[in-house]
Image (tube, rainbow, N blue to C red; front, side, top):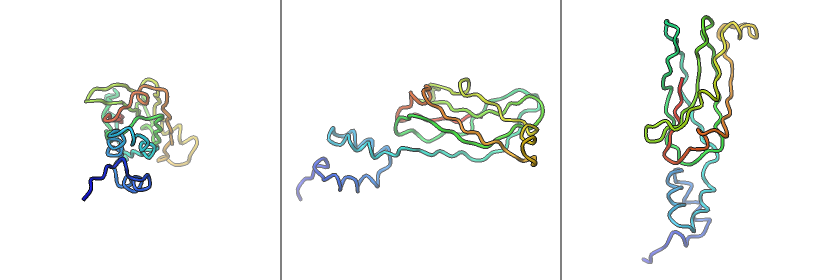
Length: 164
């Protein structure tokens, strides 16, 4: 059987093959030869990361204690923008403490953090009640992060850590 070099395969055949590859595998293949560099164009344009719903009550002492919400998957490529969308509300009394933000983590080190630059506190129940008739109403919030180190410094192998 003759030896076949993958670089010599027709583009149509390569497109069929890459359908079965994970993003990380596609990146490795595209870096294996300068002739295959064009395959990076077939990486997904969007990565959707979904966290579990949660209902957390803050400490009775009134002090905010940041905690890990979840770690996203290992990043396979860089990013241009991160959009985060969620529904939330605060308990409705005392100081507002509810926050959600992202950290860029590389080899267990926090490289960048959005907490200061994209901070917002969850609205009190009373604020929402002025607009809605139900006590269980949640505010929908969308945060768009761009031109920020959390986005600009993302490298293959990094993780996005979601904090609350």
